[in-house]
Image (cartoon, rainbow, N blue to C red):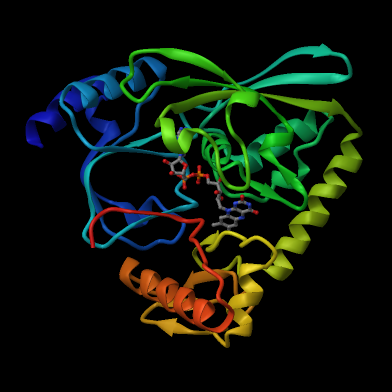
Amino acid sequence: MTELYEILAKAVGSENIEKDADMSKEVSFRAGGKADILVRPQNREQLIEVLSLLSKEDVNHLVMGNGSNLLIKDGGYRGVVVKISSAAFSDFEILKEEKGYVYVRVGAGMLMGVLARKLADNSLAGFEFASGIPGSLGGAVFMNAGAYDGEIKNIIVSAEVIDKDGTEIKTVDAKDMELSYRHSIFHNTGDVIISAELKFKQGNKEEIEAKMAELGKRRNEKQPVNYPSAGSFFKRPEGYFAGKLVQDAGLKGYTVGGAQVSELHSGFVINIGGATASDIVAVMKHCQKEVYDKFGVNLEPEVRILGED
Ligand SMILES: Cc1cc2nc3c(=O)[nH]c(=O)nc-3n(C[C@H](O)[C@H](O)[C@H](O)COP(=O)(O)OP(=O)(O)OC[C@H]3O[C@@H](n4cnc5c(N)ncnc54)[C@H](O)[C@@H]3O)c2cc1C
C-alpha cells in the first residue's frame, strides 16, 4: 500500500490523499471504519489517472460522492476510496433552450441543495423535489434519487462517464441508464459519473422558492434531521412502506448501542451518539427479521454497506 500511496500522491498531490482515512468523517452516518487510502482527484485528468493506476495495479476501489447513502463497516475498506468532491466537480453550464426546455450541464460533485439554489436563481423549474436530498448529483444519478413524486429519471438527458478502468470517457443516454426505483445501470458497470445533462422548464423564481421552502418544511417536520443518518434506511417494498412495517412490528425506538430506529420516522436508523457500523447493521438485521417474521416482507437496505466486519 505504501508504494501505491506514493504513486497516487504523485497523481493528485499529497494534500488530496489520506492513508487510513477515517470514513466516519466522510459519511452522513458519522460511523464506520477506515479506508486504506482515500483520494480526492481535483479534476477529470487526475480522476482518469487515478482510475487507470488502480486498474493497472488491480486494486479494489470504491467511488463516493457526499457519503449520504454509504456505510463502511467497522473493519474498514481494503482498497482505495475515490471521492468525487463538490470542491472539484461542481461546474455548471446552461447549454441551450429548445422546444420549451432549458438544458444544463452539471458536474457530478455538485451538492443537490447547491444545484437547487442555482436553478432557482435562473428561474428553472423541475428540481424542487431534490432540493433537500443531501447528496451529490453523481450519487443521485447512481441511485436514481427521488422524493415527493420526483426522481432523477424525469429530468436527466445523459451522463458523461469514465469507465471503471479510466480508459474511455463516454456519454450514456438516459434511455440506456435502466433508471428505476433507486437503481441505475451504473450499479453494474462501475462507470464513474463526472457530469450530467439535465432539462428543466423556465419557471417563476418566487414559485420555485416557495415550493422548495414547503418541501423543506415537510422534511424538517417528518424526518429526524438533527441526528446523523443515511436517510430512509430501507427500500420501499412493492405495495408497502418500509417505515410503516418497522413501526407496526413494534420497533420504533429499537436501539443497539448508539444506533436507533428513529422515534420520529421508523424508516430512518439514526446515530444517537457513538454508533458503530456494527450497531447500525444489528438494528438493520433485527428490523429485517422481525418484519419478515410478522409480515413476510423482505426489507432490503437502500444504504450501500461495504467493507469488512
Ligand atoms: C437526511 C437524509 C435524507 C435523505 N433523503 C433522501 C431522499 O429524499 N431521496 C433519496 O433518494 N435519497 C435520500 N437520501 C439518501 C442520499 O442522500 C441519496 O441516495 C444521494 O443521492 C446519495 O448521494 P451521495 O453523493 O451522498 O452518494 P454516496 O453516498 O457517496 O454514494 C452512494 C452510491 O453512489 C455511488 N456514487 C456516488 N457518486 C458517484 C459517481 N460520481 N459515479 C459513480 N458512482 C457514484 C457510490 O459508489 C455509492 O454506491 C437521504 C440521505 C440523508 C442523510
